[in-house]
Length: 346
Ligand code: UD1
Image (tube, rainbow, N blue to C red; front, side, top):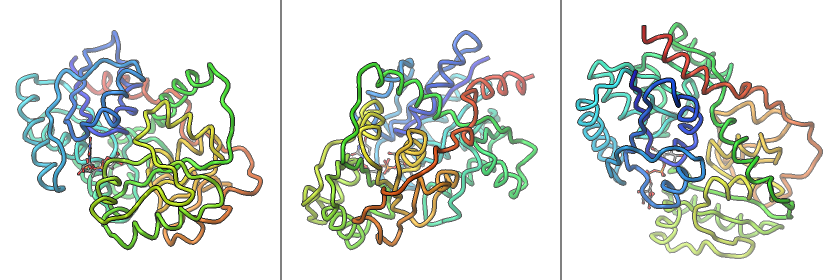
């Protein structure tokens, strides 16, 4: 059996890793890189850090508008799939590489599995929400990470093709945490921050307000800037390195998890980071009005701050009871995915 995993953006390299480890020896597993992310810090370093094989091809699709980028990936993936005729294609998460990969495969009659199916923000203004909903509806097999995701799939009439497997990101996180903890890690009075979503970076007023409030933080804010943030800040003439803010380039996966552990809390608009903060027992402030990972809101571990009212206060303060990490499964998600593909092939 031949399975091609289609990845292209930073979080997908983290999600494919456990599947790649687990598929080893069971079937032929090939990684196709769409090239949606191309900077070394957003792409290349994940493969070595997570000890997975390099992609067999990189389509170098690059950046562009939603339509142009998705279209380039769609055409490029189709060409490769026509040559290699895999038994399954796996797509991950909610990026333009996810929807384009799923669409290319399904139209060629190739079965598609969607890893991290069933997440919903119920905010159709987000490109990611369109990508998730579309991918779930056209895929053949949906691998849901949480009960909540299963419930969303049930509500959309997709239950019969859905499997509750748990969250693959927990497996990657524990793998990397073990590496980090080979050396002592100190906790400092500083915040680990990232901002990259279109809703926070596309408008000058919004971005300016976020940066102004971060700059007034009572403790240092280490801002690991995604290229989108750097480009937008430059275009709008916004200086990121003001007041409490210390600007760094995008962090590798190792540096990200280490930075979270070293911090007193995380400020982000990333989905993955909200969950990583929760699993690593650090409070998180999410600069959005809704979250797909609603489990993280339990016990005040994650707070939503779409209105930017808490961002320059002491939002991390207060006692919290330990988070229930079992809501993200039992670290066997990748095994269930691999077994699911084998089971449903016959
Ligand atoms: C994409 C995903 C988002 C995910 C994020 C993780 C979509 C719609 N969004 O957002 O869900 O959370 O990846 O990082 O697929 N750029 C570079 N170098 C790169 C890649 C991008 O400079 O290697 C810059 C370009 O200016 C580009 C911009 O970042 O236009 C945005 O990149 P894009 O791939 O469109 O989306 P992300 O914001 O990274």
